[in-house]
Length: 138
Image (cartoon, rainbow, N blue to C red; front, side):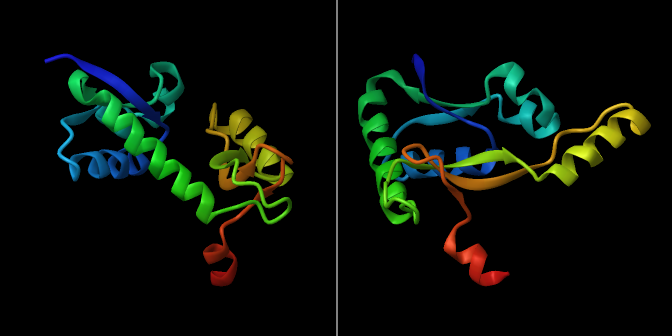
């Protein structure tokens, strides 16, 4: 059976959630490059992320389910600045102090990964924000 890439993910949690969602709908799927990323996260960009592979005969249904899930997610997390639902949960570099710490690590330790935050990013107005649950927990 042939498998087609339905989506790619930057972390195994999102990949597993998507795979579980499709499997609950009896869609034959699996994750490619998951173990490589789990062992060496620094390779994520080099190998193109974790790929959600779906059986070719089921690809259209899988893509529709993934699209609906993403749409529902966006509707539940609109931009507080402009109200747009054109929002995604993305990775962004941390504040300037972290950049300095990264530079120090590169000089002292021979290299370090750039620290990053996960935030919602509005693609209409450019506003970045944390989800409401995080804000109330702080």
